[in-house]
Image 1 (tube, rainbow, N blue to C red):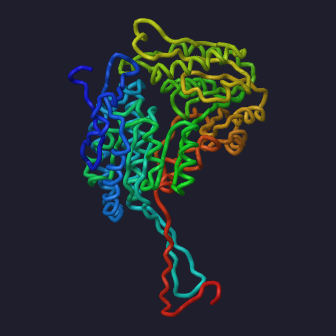
Image 2 (cartoon, one colour; image 1 turned 90 degrees about the horizontal axis):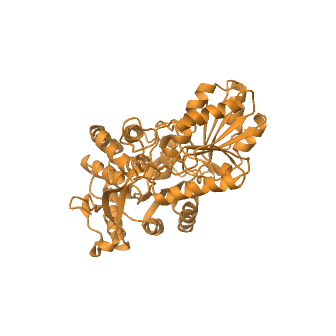
Image 3 (cartoon, rainbow, N blue to C red; image 1 turned 60 degrees about the vertical axis):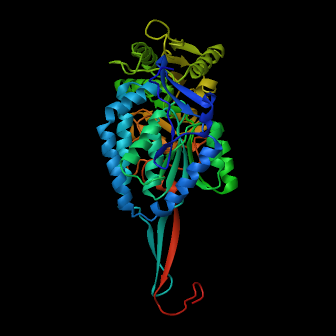
Length: 501
């Protein structure tokens, strides 16, 4: 550690708070740049139960006033946070690239997503609609309204360390809740800066808190009786444990877990459009998106083999390197252990009889030795193989050939996940049939499996083991962070007995 290496602190009650674990430096964890493993970005405390109790106490106090702050006033803070983020967009993106490795152009896009998310949910501060209904009795009205729930424990992922926390924080705050965010150990700085900017925007003391830590802290957050809502983006294994805990405690719980997404290409697809879509979907963010295109299901045709060859040649030309460098299209994997995991998937696929089309190796050499780089890889496999059904979370594309539309749909649905599926075709009837038959929370037509937007109808979430039916983004996200209250108003000036009178 150099003298300039920053030791980050938790944020509790709008102030940096030294963790009780810092009595011993052995409780600090380090974060290095995945594109340059010798570049130490910072040190962070492993928060304790004592730290969590302090954050809960402060958040609980803040909730008592924040919940009654008019929603349009809460919105003003999100608007201001968006402006601060706009002013800092470049530096926030560079920080994000350093801690995740993603190319700067992608990092800038992620920061724009934070801005858009703030602006969208700030707009909801003028809505937060409820419902009115007709009573069966005269001179009586029925109104159902949304109200906040309390402290929300937000557990985020490393692959989108700014955007994903904003998906959770913005709807929680606009609804009148308070939050405790635990960013991933693999990308802790972006979450810290997000909370810091909300405080700069005028968020009252204790409404947004941040604790650094590992999975043990995440479990402690999910088990805490004063934390009423849990939202987690992570693995299926961890999500199931959190869901079980929340179920026993009757807490609201939102899960965004894994994906095994596919592009289906029918024989009438626009080949140039398909080529661009597969390259971006499979290798953007080095395949480290829950929505990354992990499979290409291609109908056999007179052009399918030549297309696969062309795809391989294009993949070989992708520029892999440090995301801060000009022209880089694919950054590193997040860590050495994750790169080893990805490579083991490739080795097993080849051992099972998969045909290597391109890639398949750890990148080495002057421009790659300092980071966790991996070749963009394409392997032709059978529909029931591990590579065609299990999430890899890396720049590895499984190609599966099918005979017809019906087989393509069957193969696309042949996985435990159901996040994002896509079909390329010029047949509008087939496109609409696919949108109805594909088993996923998101379906794209003539576009890759990545590209979620911010907007009222743009709900993000999946089916099957991808989650528990909750949604992030759009107005449906408010369902996680609000509870309904139905109010009956009787102005008849007499006792009226429902279902009797």
